[in-house]
Amino acid sequence: MEKRKRLSEVALGILPPDTVIRNGTVFNVFTKEFIKGQSIWIKDGRIAYVGFEAHPMRDKAEVIDAQGMALLPGLIDGHTHIISRTNIEEFIRYVIPGGTTTVITETIELATIAGKDGIDYFVKGLEGQPIRFFYTIPPLCGLTSVEEIQAPPNRELLPLLQDPRCLGVGEIYWGNLFLEGFQGERVRELASMALDLGKRVEGHSAGATGVKLQAYFGFGISSCHEPITEEEVIERLRLGCWVMIREGAIRKELDGVKGIFSRKLDFRRLILSTDGMDPQGFLEEGYLDAALKTALKMGVPPEIVYQMVTLNVAEHFRIDHLVGSLSPGKMADLVIIPSPGEYAPQLVMCEGKTIFKDGKPTVEPRKVSFPDSMFHTVNVQDNPLPPIPSKGRVRVMELVSRLVTKEKILDLEDREAMRDVIPILAFDRLGGKESFMGFLKGFGLQRGALGSTMSWDTADLMVAGCDMTSMKTVIGRLKEIGGGAVYAIGEDVLAEFPAPLCGVISLKSMTVMREEMKGIENSLRRNGVTWERPVLTLDTLGSSAIPQLRITHRGYARLKDREILPLEVSV
Image (tube, rainbow, N blue to C red):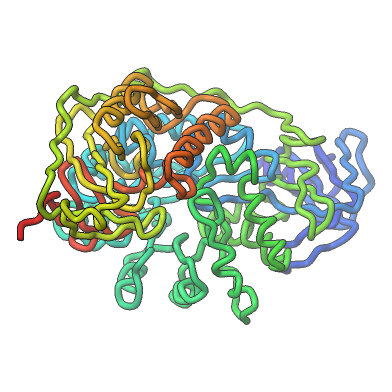
């Protein structure tokens, strides 16, 4: 109450503001107006007044002259994975210059390997940072119940769900929500717990249409970041869904749905998000600011774009009483840019503190620490690799795109059919001894082997290779460096990306991470792989987020019925 009273007294001219920003063109997110000649008065990290100067200036206030430039609310990323190979500190360093001051992050990466401890340490790392973080609880949706072994009992997640910084449950794959038995019941119960607390349940409805889509949203799912066509966007908007258009490292969907902006629709449930950015993207493109600038270049009106990264996100997550607008009582998060059509941050504030000015950040991230046990998670056994049959009919994963696969049955003695088919190994790396050797078609690799421990939704180590010696070298090196990605030919390691934190996160600088990953990609390109971001292809082959045929250490998994399938096919 005392803080609110102080804000009122500043607006009335009784108390001086801490900071005054003068002579700016303020973007009003509620009316979509750019209003010239405005001032913003800030007290105790919040906005006390916005408008034409109503009282004489007090000497005690810091005055910033915006010189007619545009003032926007700080950007909000509503769906991202902040530790997508990148550590928390480096993420913050490279996000600040782009004007993002609030981030809602998924927390699945460490939880897949370390369970609830992974969530707890991740959440602690978000505290006390120079930008604001909210988070969602990971539903840990695996292909089968075996991949969900690290999922804690729902009752243990209740204290996290009750945390004001927790905005609900993260993306639940629509197929997992409808699974029979304990696997489906667990995520349905978790979703219900969040809804009963008035929190959000985030969606992932790729591939769902018609009655399945309606049944999915009928369970209380509030958003989806998977639409890739105009028709999919409209179908979800008509069902009351908040649609997050993805423009990040994994996929860039703006170009495929840009026609939506020429239609006479209400865009207040449209959100622009990244779904995560990798080191190369951070350094060469930017973050949410890059997505925003892409939308502006496409001709989307600035007022629509700015709503999509401020008020729309805040209203969806029910945090618009704190952020998302430049209005009295809200957190003093703002970005100063040259003009409405030129997004180039000159100054960034978070809670009234300047965090970026004169082309560089003015703050440093708080250092984050993790227990030693989280750096020793590649516990593969020194067992012989599973044998590969030389004849007969086998089941093969064929790449349709760099992420999507389909099931194919091939004859091993049919040389033409077996062109560009290489072995792929899934190995339980959390101390188990189980492994499965399958076949992958269409990856393009002609020499050596690529391995990764950064797999989505599973603790399996994945290795795709042309020969057993190279595959063994990759496994041994991943064990030595604590995880990440390795490319080897024979007994020689040509390139590697060490990610020792739970085998998924690097602790190095962004520039070093980019060069290490580029080293792997360049080596793969020289040896036949033409896919963009080829390590990502390998990392997704064990996920239930993407159709059709996936792989686990127990066998292939067919997504539509979750049946575990063997390599060899009987006649």
